[in-house]
Length: 303
Image (cartoon, rainbow, N blue to C red; front, top):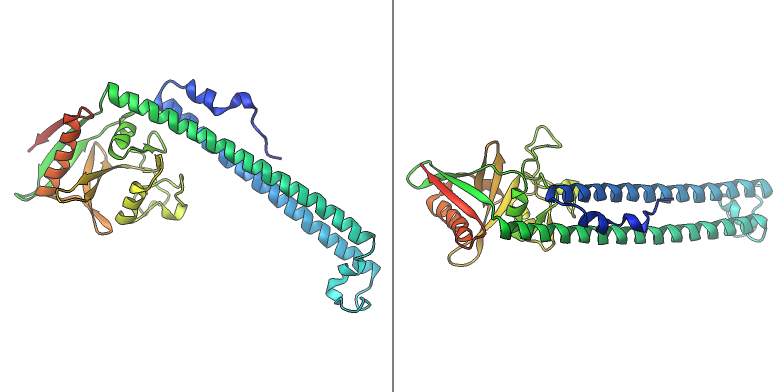
């Protein structure tokens, strides 16, 4: 039966005892692993009960065939339903009692599973609150520093780079840009891939993202960024929504590329790295507004 953690191991005490954002994320990741292991234990227990029930039914069917030979079943009962010939006998009583016990066991297991899941969801909510509170304190005490690099391609085209950031800064920037926290502390520098023939996926298969959904189109990725929720399972990039003068907004991303992050804009179902002059100016202007509001320390360098 899946183990229930004692109350003194409750995640709230662990979360409040963590001093850094990275340690909070490590504990959060450990909790996700615990939840995955608990779900596997419940699944194995359900499978065991299912096998036990199937075995009992098969045993009773086999025993009934020995009591009532096939071909002599009462009217209305086919030879293949020979287990029904013991409907009023001890075999049916035995099967009924066994099924009642199995039903109680399944119901009890379902209650335990629901209680376990509720505890984990409460624990995750506590971690989310802890991380968000610390991110807010970090942002107010020390706004993240960014260095924006303009590289002209032509008179009307440019490439924008942002110097690579590390530590807690990616977590702070994601919250600043989207109001949400990442699902992992080292998300921005994670260049791992599940398929070496493809570039790294921009999403982790967690927080409601199925394994088949980790490589969405640009429009689907935008929907994921705009969706409600506290946690955004992005990987290898920072999303930035930049308002348009006439209303609406454009979807930019800072894609990790070695020593820099390259600014790309969504166009249709893909992203484009070479920006128009108007796009590059609006993106730089968005960061400048955050700088003037004291939420960002921005340095701009142009060719």
